[in-house]
Image (cartoon, rainbow, N blue to C red; front, side):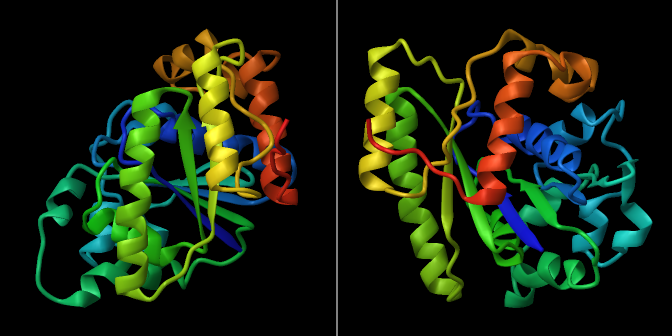
Length: 252
């Protein structure tokens, strides 16, 4: 089982969009996939077809008031969701025992039969992200092709390495370029910087800027349900193949 924390401290880079659509693409390839909504905003939960984020979810799991079996939401034959829950933000404020950081990993130890687990992380570096990192075997970082995204990435890597070292838990990093506009000189420059700083870690397929990708969450659908013949659907299908085969970008 491969467990990936989808994380970036910068908002608007496509963490939820990537978690949702990459999960659907992996499912379409025949893999069994579990999605986790670790963001208190609950956008992954809502985008997955639920009108609200009111039912108990990971908030109850992390406080040990619920089990995986009691909160899991089957979506398709090979796709399921652990929703956020209305009190997830409160867990971020807890302090005390170091065991709090291992709650998610311990809970997922009883989860069997999935090929991929994708965790949609909040844009923070607190207890929720630490739980996600400790429960994961890899990290996937969506990056947009703009200057501020590159600045934010530098900060993210610094915090990530600090947490990784303090927890003694090494995690391979993968990057995916999102909201990609290949004709823009700045975007191409960011791409080259990523390839320079993280050779062999940038997945081959960039996710192109797409109106359909922006619209689909409003209809509580993945891009494959909303516009199956769109660029967005094609890109996420290719990205799933990249992830499975560890296919990466090369320098031009």
